[in-house]
Image (cartoon, one colour):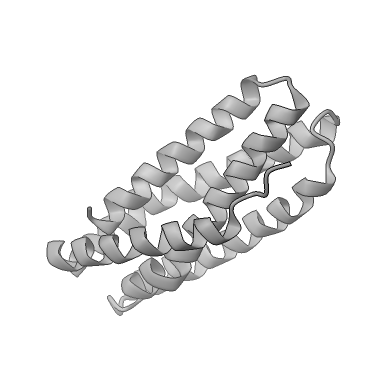
Length: 152
């Protein structure tokens, strides 16, 4: 699977988890969904930062450099919000507010990646994107396995 297709699939999966958490009232279920979102986002950001962004940066254009720099900063903000969520009670109104902010941050990031960065990434060529996608998928599973939430 091409790297961009893999990332799009992961974007869609996380979006679905955000929709589920919005519709869920049960505090325990909300916490479980948050843990899954956090695990998936952390693994997703890891493969982007370790593999995809460096490949895009190698295109050597100013636009690629700017997109990658902004993407790293957006990841930084997502990580800050994720770090605060374990301390917030899922029944607290702040939980919903933080989830909304996190969802909006992620959605903005996804839109920019899919509309701009993925277009530029096509310049890497189909074979490179395919190879990169396979390596990224393997690394994603590895990272996600290391960060799986512990059963309560």
